[in-house]
Length: 274
Image 1 (cartoon, helix red, strand yellow):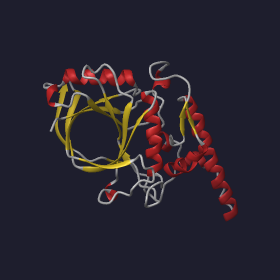
Image 2 (tube, helix red, strand yellow):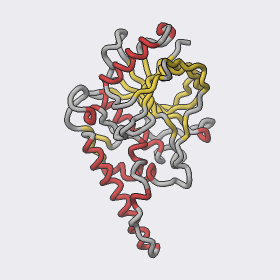
Image 3 (cartoon, helix red, strand yellow):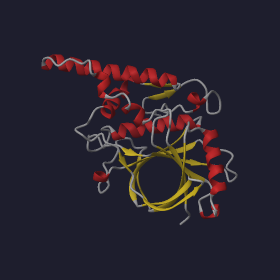
Image 4 (spheres, one colour):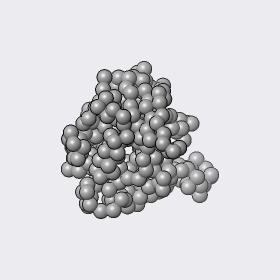
């Protein structure tokens, strides 16, 4: 199976410290190496600029290979182009578009947000479901495949643009004690591609129309691994007045910032039953 140029080595799902457990490279990781950090590139002739661009691409790849090793992930040479695409300005299209929603209610206690109830409208998503040896591997391999779809491996041959959050659909047993290794990574198509989303070249990536959905969402920080997700699911279930109104065996983890950020922004989503 083509794993999108991402290979994980070393420990599995449950072992190691927080950095090992949060072993996922995200779109925002790639963008964090900004063009400002390539400022020592020259401004000479066209030939020199071409050489500098090649050097910059190589530096970007090596930078992310070094970062990835800290997450026990290896980034293959073929990821150089997608990394460059996500790091460059892309003709002004690198701004992150947030998935639109309507806020229905908020529940707070002593000024602290416990959860929000939101409505997300129907929309097109690009999804891939994988079952690897560990939950973290499924996320990593799935995300790398989605990343390549965003960066030109689609029928338009164009960079599609970024949206946040990138979501992961996780499945549990009815007691919320075990997470399945079947993981779906999903990317919401930007507004200008919603009407006619470009088909992917990867035949395992599926374009789906997700129906309008009401979700109960709670923010949390830190790594997203089996332990933290189970803890967040159980904490959210205790906070809801009527947890029975929500789907009991499928949940969404929404990621807004990269795993290396000191104040990571994630959410756990409970889906209201239709």
